[in-house]
Image (cartoon, helix red, strand yellow):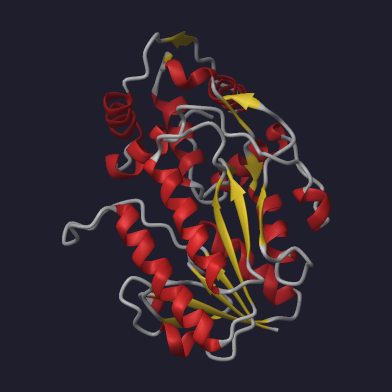
Length: 303
């Protein structure tokens, strides 16, 4: 099967491409700057925001994976990340429909109880656009993916490394279902052929944890002692900028992520793993695997 993977050099795409190739698929990657992408697949130039190269890349493709998210705003770009997300999705959807693509597979975000998050609202809008254009498409909705290259997970690890006392805002009590990168990869792989089209599936790990519990478990698994201090307020705008400074991250990334933490982010259903034939890893197993992969290329200062 001929398959196109957008974001082939990104966190999830770089895991998915080798798995697709191992299954015998003809895989093509799409990137704005192909020379900067190290991948076992052929990489072609294309830009969903401008539409450049999309028609040629989608020609003859049966399944297209849409793994593009616009979190940070380029200095030359005035549009918000939500506007860029919408524009890119509309361009991709139109060209996929014209090319006769059978299925688009999209990785988005669980909606849960977080009702005022522009980040999650944008994911929902992109999902709507893609699934409306190609009827047999499927969307997987995850909360936090645990992996060595996951920016959400790396943010948490850096906070544990660099904060001697874990000062956790009020959103620490909200719950989520973090999921192992290996499980997400296997679910995405299964979506190429499984009879699950024309629907959205919430995917979550087997463990339900509050954000506070999750951070404390990461500290334990890193074998570091970090006393926790619960704060009575969230003050998201301030907290996000402080967290970004501590972790060495861009506030434009951290702020929308933290706004999505103001409510439970739990899977609405728990049958996705069974439908896709995936056995889920525990949270502890996911973190241990991610930390091990991290240390293959980069030292963890706290370990």
